[in-house]
Amino acid sequence: MLAPNYLPDTHHALIAELADALESSSLHWLSGYFAGVAQARQPAREAAPPLAVAAAPAAPAAAAQRLTILYGSQTGNAKRIATQLHDQAQAQGLAVRLARADQYKPKELKDEELLYVVMSTQGDGDPPDDSIAWVEFLLGKRAPKLPKLKYAVLGLGDSSYPSFCGISQKIDARLAELGAERLQDAGAADLDIETVAAPWQAKALEQAAEALKAAGAPVQATVTPLHPQAEKYTRDRPFSAEVLQNQAITGRDSDKDIRHLELSLEGSKLVYEPGDALGVWPVQDDTLVARILEATGLNAADSVTHQGQQRPLGEWLGRTRELTVLTRPFLTALAARAATDELTQLLLPESRDALADYLGGHQLIDALRQWPVAWTGPDLVAALRPLAPRLYSIASCAAAAEDEVHLTLAHVAFEQDGESRWGVASHFLAERAEGETVPIFIEENTRFRLPADGSRDIIMIGAGTGVAPFRAFVQARSEAGASGRNWLFFGNPHFTSDFLYQTEWQQALKDGDLTRIDLAFSRDQAEKIYVQHRLLERGADVYEWIQAGAHVYVCGDANHMARDVHAALLEIARDQGGLSEEGARLWLDELSAQGRYARDVY
Image (tube, rainbow, N blue to C red; front, side):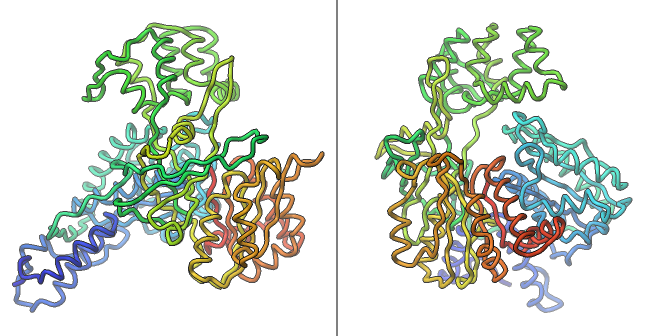
């Protein structure tokens, strides 16, 4: 019988190294795999090894005997919540599988009996890119009747947008319309995700255990680890990265302050691939904290207890609460105290456009000053949204940057009512001097990856800081000696002051690492020219590259640039490919399904 201390030391080292490198979902899968291997190798009369395997591994569960967790994620939050739910279900021995929406076969839906959907809403009511086809199938005529299905939906969104969690609400209503049984009301999580997600997950686990027990589903194998897993730096346990460089890369005459940051990863064991994002936990500026305290008449040193944690109010505001972003929930809490007709009217359903305009044009300090009321420290902390990390597309390739990670960020700073205002994370990063540290983590973006085949051509389309991942792409292709061609479309206001990484692109062209570059400087002529216009001008070549197997990548603003580029690609398909409007849409959908049309939009 094999006991843990029978393993050779070399095997201990290999297992520890493997465990350190894998995510929890992969470790859970390996636990079942190794349990199955052990059972297959032991003689029929031999009992299962008690020290490693706690229960015999279950055969692959049929749809009727398992929980399926399906997620759609744009920035990684829905994936994180869905993975947590998956791991918790596995820890309870439940038969469960985790599926990204674009990897789930629609024909399987008719056979599901227990389905949980975790779905983010992108922009103002759109599905995330990885879920477009699945949502279209579910909402379309081909969706099957689902009388056997029990389900629950958790939506992630931003209440600053009028269509808060709009996609998840449509999914929830559609599943019910198709005859499925709703196990609990659809959750609608704001940017303080865990506030709604945690109780929703707990209830979902209880319901899954009851449903699978009633269906007679077997309990899966669980494996006790031989060694504890080494701690890794994550979203909840960030790494303090030293700032090596913080340099402005726009000219003196630019209207923008765009910076290139280089951070050290030495000692972190953090790894990343081109296309991934860097998560940053910002700290609020002391000046803004002081303004909030002045507007509320509160004291930074006041001790405040919230959700079982006690700390000074100044620390609550500076390190744990959103102060630059104004939200509908805060205005609702303010309205309960202020009781003014103006604020009450603003929060009515018919005022959604006016509310969106107000939220977009004002910050928290404006609302506190416009409707002054008495606050206590605990009430203010409870009314404010928890501070969330910000994600930035990584602008470097690990093979080239080694123990560093690079960022390209626009410092959001402006004057309003004679007062300086800023975005919390970009201001925090822009103010970091060399030698200071930044709390960071890596956020994988598996849908925004270079083609595995280095001979494939790539077309990269980015405006402003959206060029960041393409710097990493070109570096990676150069380091790997990829033979495929690289074509960059880049746009910004002015050539002389806003041509980000100009010398690097020129050198890449000279070295052959960049095959073509098309530039759109929108303010350098009377008529505004953007990247979508350059795409249309080069439409014949763009279509030829794509038809020959090129991958297309888009990075930038979701509500304007990315939509305009999408429309331009549809027009190219119609003009150059002779496709109908429906045919062009299906053409792009197929490219997306193949992983050849990927977007990193925000």
